[in-house]
Image (cartoon, rainbow, N blue to C red):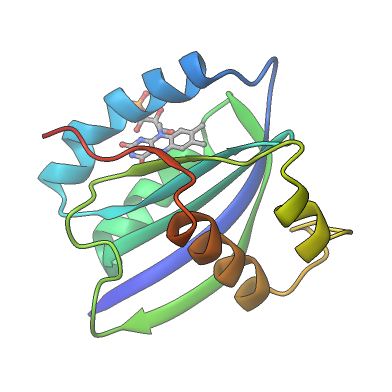
Length: 140
Ligand SMILES: Cc1cc2nc3c(=O)[nH]c(=O)nc-3n(C[C@H](O)[C@H](O)[C@H](O)COP(=O)(O)O)c2cc1C
């Protein structure tokens, strides 16, 4: 039984790509070992992460992530059972949420994931990936 989970959180302390890169390099090994994939978006004072994999391993990883003091206000936005992975080759892609991208601002003038519907936020993550905002794919 595979699932896809999307959550939002707020970083504690300054949010830099360096912090995110170190989180991601920690994550690569664990995710690969547990066959978990997804996307981590950061920017605008937010983290948005999609996790995909077997239900048990994704739940256990989510519990670890929930206990991580590098972020707070962790809230599940979307949860679904899936038959196909959307990010099969990516143990964890990295997307920078643009602070001042006019397209994103225009498309989503009052973007607040804590208030928006989960499917809306999921669609936005897809849009960001499709429009080439991924700044890092998986480690080879
Ligand atoms: C926003 C965010 C996303 C994270 N994503 C992952 C991830 O995909 N995989 C992972 O193993 N750890 C991830 N972590 C790190 C875990 O929360 C945790 O620190 C790591 O699994 C090590 O746990 P331990 O200190 O209990 O050994 C993430 C942390 C944050 C703050």
